[in-house]
Length: 112
Image (cartoon, rainbow, N blue to C red; front, side):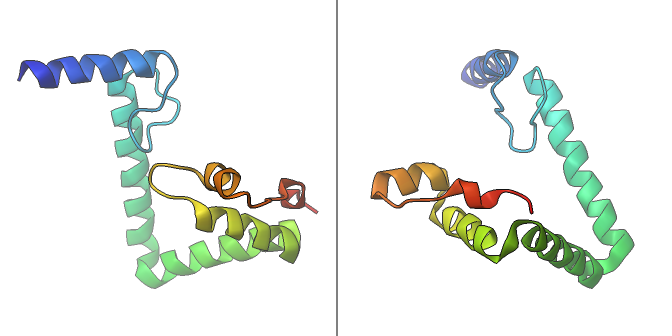
């Protein structure tokens, strides 16, 4: 029990320094704030899924992807996918690309 409290205190301190310690808690200035933000965002997504239905919610995501593809152009969208495909749980796509010597041209990411 004491180690759990110490762990929460450590996470709270890291959150106060600006680090995101809870997935979905971006912007929270404390552990508790990040937990509340993450919960609210998750609940918001679930509510929208209930409103649209599963198929409608899936279609909304597809339309978002198509819109982004149109904004970036085919080449930029492919480059973004290449970078995303390299990401793992512990490293971003950019970090993995750098390690493997793969050139990712982020200038192609620009909106048209």
